[in-house]
Image 1 (cartoon, rainbow, N blue to C red):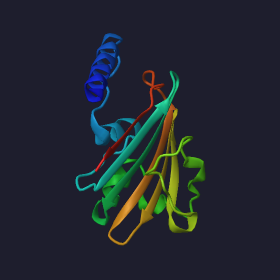
Image 2: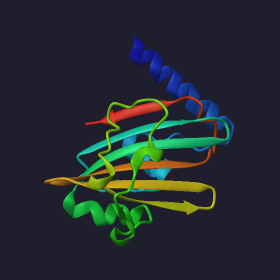
Image 3: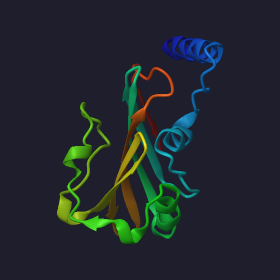
Image 4: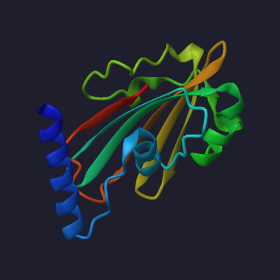
Length: 158
């Protein structure tokens, strides 16, 4: 029953957004991460988590993507970063979401590298953590909202 209600709310939201001439809400975490961060999640991503918050003026997207080591270059490039730009010891505290997200668990700065990119009214922060077999990438993107994002959304794609 709850799922049916959520589906009706999502459909109604899409209809209202369509009537207002706004972009259709991207479907699924990969599409939302691409839409709100500008980063294309490559094939082979093991886990993708996202959380969208904001208000009528601004949005804040937090995402975590777990990638095989062979895909990190492609992913960074799609975000507008290069491996050379990443600074070791990047402190992730400023990237933290306001409310706790169970999957948002960046390590201490000595175990990570990160960078910031500002393009006009959009800001992206990235934190990359190399692990034994993969990379965990934490993203925070902010900017002017294309439409009202006051409804928070979170999802987990296993």
